[in-house]
Length: 529
Ligand SMILES: [Zn+2]
Image 1: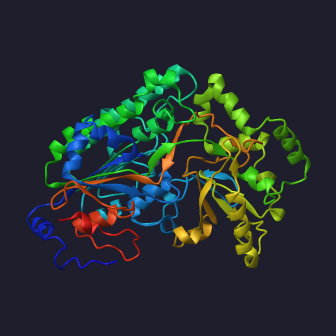
Image 2: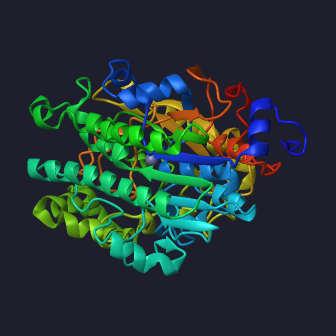
Image 3: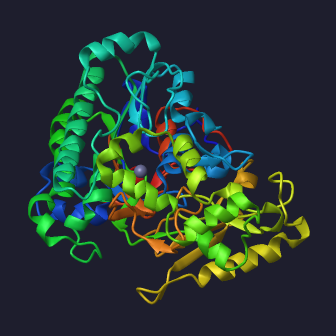
């Protein structure tokens, strides 16, 4: 899609205002925010600034990437492209030797909104957008976000700003230090830290906004996401984990996270004025969480996975059979109060600890294995020849094996609920296109609309279903939040199904930046008068 940027705009007002005034845009990223949760509070008048904003803006449920995962969703926002073109699908990747690796920003192989704007000479400030570590060079400032290791890392661009930042914000954190656990005191402390981090980030945003020039400003908050992941059980009476006792003191955690943003909004919108384009977006929605499903166990049961028969694997399997598995060990470490230490372990070291005790991909007999699962929501890869060193499935058998996997996945049942849980299956080419699709899972599934997740470790337990030791009770959904206001933007208007990939091209159009043909997102023309 290419727009004629020298010709008249589709909106006369924008055209005129562009000639005379400098365009500015501010994006407020709210990881995990969903109308499903907060719209009723807006209607009830409990979030007055959101209420006012709704009247002045266009809004709609923002459709995110499949599956609705933070790294792929934010990457699709930043690039305006589907994951097949930027390469990021999950928090973790497998290397050639089937070791689990954390994927960082550099896994993303497509130009970002920051770069498009920088190249045109616009000044960019970006704070805490997930999956931006290490920060990329921009015409402006970038402070990397979620998954940045610590203040000791190279978290800021330009690096010369580091001292100034640390002097002004010595207590800045990229994540909470406390971990949610079964203990009530940890739950209180964790929630306080969620709120503290949100407030701290507001201070950083205010400081940067006032002190440095910008044309495009973005700040993202993780607080709503975290509150919904861990405090859902105190909020949703129909959650299988609903805790009425805990709800007395913790039931308002999710509301408070939205309310903090509402307070901030009032002040922020007044400062930005009517001429600044203002966008609120989230990377996915939220809903009830049910269970973890260890999809590899299912594939093993169905004969897709075969284990090695050597002594090492046999010994590990005997531990596994009696229930001394990676999940149990992690749980014991977590409950022993060493949870903080465990959290500090890199995924690589957790994985190597796991490989000492538990069954891992190293115990799989790849020559006899047709398929395996790897990824947060349990997608399945065909063990295709040529893809990995020990690929066993011949190209001519690929479709046959894939059909068999789909059939098996559709039969996966949660016996406790008496319910088949896979409600949607996609072949990868139905949802992705681009140079990275070859590396992606061949079968993508939604288990009860993503209310079930899988596990990073391939075989954490002998069981098929379990509850995670992190006590998670809320999980991602497909519909995020889109709110947009500014000169010429329709007021109190509802847009049907905008995509997370549409925001970048829409902003580029407003700034008269040419939109590359291979961008998947489109300009949301219908939101303009
Ligand atoms: Zn997210």
